[in-house]
Amino acid sequence: MTSVTQNGWSRYGPIKKYNPPQTSCNAIYLNPTAAPILLYVIRRFHNEVAGHDASPLQCWGFARSGPIGNSGIYSNHESGTAVDLNATHYPWGTDRMSASDEAKCRAIVKACGGIIRWGGDYNRKLDQMHWEINDGVSKAEVLAQIKKMRLNPDGTVKPKTAKFNYPRRLQQGSAPAWDIAHLRAHLKMEPGNSWGPVMTRKVGADRKRLGLPEKPRILDEAYAHKMGATFKGK
Image 1 (cartoon, rainbow, N blue to C red):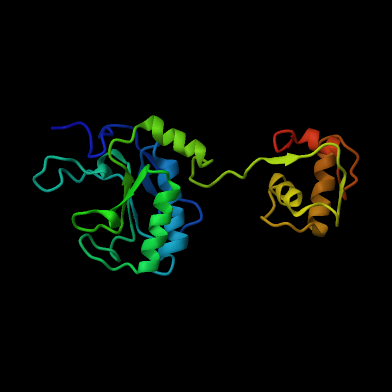
Image 2 (image 1 turned 180 degrees about the vertical axis):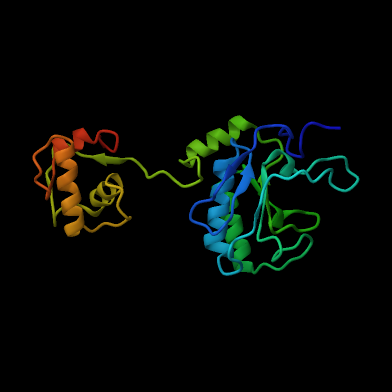
């Protein structure tokens, strides 16, 4: 009996429970190394492809399913490196997906940099529900792609680090949209590029927390330095 699945990952590796964020998907069990990129796939599939098809989204991950047919090869589900999404809507061997949704699926594959294979691109029977870590892809390659994509452990994407040109004083009404957007991210506000009274209050409170004069309408060099992890001078 082989100890690895089709893509070369161990059938006996660690498995962990996840609740995919920003989806209606119930809990799913995955290999922790592969989880961030598979959770990224689940989130995008739910929101871009299948949101109109099923609620909650059917998410099937790790399973002891045995060898595939009489091949003696074990499914990647056994290593927690594959997921089936909305399986009853896209049964194995059928072609039910629209051309536009197929294009969206291939865009997800492309974003994953060759790490992910989609069953809708199989040369044999189609498996449009199925997504997996590609054959021969190592853990190191998965981790490198996760870093490149800036993925959090739950598959969400980390915001890009903003850059701040010193010295510069940015006042409400004159701050470039880029700087406002990244300041909103620092303040854990909803994405956007507008200032508004809520942001004014939050900036004032944050400056006070950092030991700066409140001046809630001003984003200055001192404030930027205090937020060094978010705002970096060129």
